[in-house]
Image 1 (cartoon, rainbow, N blue to C red):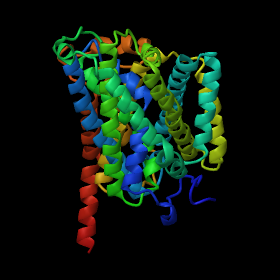
Image 2 (tube, helix red, strand yellow; image 1 turned 135 degrees about the vertical axis):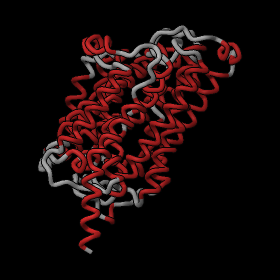
Image 3 (cartoon, rainbow, N blue to C red; image 1 turned 180 degrees about the vertical axis):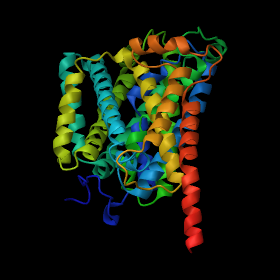
Image 4 (cartoon, rainbow, N blue to C red; image 1 turned 45 degrees about the vertical axis):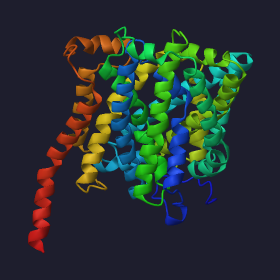
Length: 437
């Protein structure tokens, strides 16, 4: 097994393979944050929100979501195991299988959406059948997943991806702003409807939160927790906020009607914009790589004896098939639904970690599963999200226009319930150890 590109399973990573420093983590997560899908997500915030409201939602959601992402990266670096294995401590071994299934579903879903974005951009640039570009994008992402996170950072991010993409997005930012009437945009009111301000915050939170179940898969190769936290949190925050804001501005300044039209507008925006889009399309394959890789690692939590490379190949095949059945414009509700699962789940994990629970011999811990469920229910009560049949079922319980978003309250509720269920027993055990000494 190569130290440079290890196909490491779910056992704790040995010291010899813990090679990623703070700068490595920052470059990895900055590269993952510089994504076409993030740019497209920014278009969803407007024109329902004004530009001022959209930027404030981006700031609030970005600070909260990336603080959680940094904390997840820290836990991964300290425990040296993948995210789904970390969840064995709060939920039990079998209890961790439920979030594992959800995480695989979300990773495959993200892979599909990324493949769709790459294929749409490629067709806008050079033409050709869309199905061909879907196959090419899925194949490249799967091939990168075989490289592994350490090799990916060293061979792809450092040598090419980050620098070319920064230059490309710098040009696109100038292209979006150089002839825009920013004063008029700033004064223009929002039209209302979806999303509201707090739904916009949830939508911004959903992007970094979607990485919570993946962060430890990469930061387990980090040399220390501090570098993992700051490299991940800051590395993802800056490009995330930048591209959300740029997507919103582009939709307003270019008179676009929906998210997919953004890619067509950039492709038709002149040679410079087209070249920048080419670089972004090539680089975009890194994001489905991460999702394919983490799907395989997560599945090993349930199927530890199945070779990781076989699981990568299977996930790639499933995602390729899904790219022919999913519509790109429906991904906003998908983002919010994922957030309603994983924000409260991380509240439970963080609470148990703070209390010192690093492992559990139990198969299932029902109390902690209940804390997670309570957070999910609160999120859906405050901000119903998901398929139309689900939102129509739960929307009648919504508290009304005065409600805040679901992310912060659901995290807080799951965290508090998890602490409350564990603290009395924790205090008794600490007292017994003290008296025994």
